[in-house]
Image 1 (tube, rainbow, N blue to C red):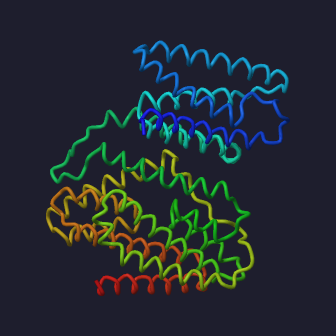
Image 2: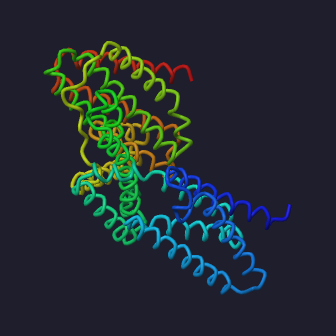
Image 3: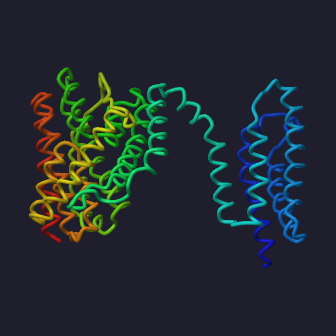
Length: 414
């Protein structure tokens, strides 16, 4: 098959995909009452590919520029007439049409794979209008401001930070520490948004699971406090167990993304512990029928204050881990990971993963990650004992012991 025919086919497919979304959204409109539908968008993508092919054949990029400007003028004129008739000020259709034309041209003149991905992303973005608008309505100005401040700090400060270690143990790298801090905040922000979007109406289970993506410790503390006034504290202990499961799975995903070799080492014990927490939590929640009086509320991961505290803790844990590992090797790393894990499992795990490039074996780093997970479980349980009733923390203690036994058994079997 002629490569040009295939590329024109992809250009047509991009237009069809976007046109399908636009046509479905306006499917109830009378015939010939809209500027662009599924056919117009499909032709727009194909037209972009044809104009780009003509520009290449004539060796004149001006043909593509003139074609784009002509297309923009035509679709803008028709959309202006439609907007005047409907008293509508939306320009989405015009921008989408221009994007389809440009992506069609990119299929022929550039990388067709990038164009195809761009077309799919464009269609998904157009289809998520209600979700995005609903999200904006739920977000507060403080949350938005925190995200904007963090973005500015990252875009401005990160390139200025030195990308090298500044201590004799090669543990303190300012650029790496800030980058991983932003990465973890971004992962946590996804869970935070889930909590904000789902709200209290979805009940105890969803709130606990979504909140655990941000901080299982904060969720456990909130559940412990709420369980004091609850008639069935066992259900809250079940939710805390499921939050612990989510915390373990989140750590596994982070390790898998940053150090796949370490993820393979910790997979069996970590997943066994997560499965044990899931089983215990499900059993405890089996008889739960009432909604919580108060859903666990997680802090905003993009608050500058807590974020800087995390960065400082991460920097301290990284430097201490490197220093102890250089002096006491495996025992020093395990001790530092366990101590840091009591306060923040993310900082402890990231500090351990950074030592892979410092002549520390994968097995040693994997044990440090497991030590951090175990220490964090002990820290959560300690908070539950301090803040919750016996009927809450005693089942959670049992679930923690079962999870620890399951993880240890997996290690022994392997």
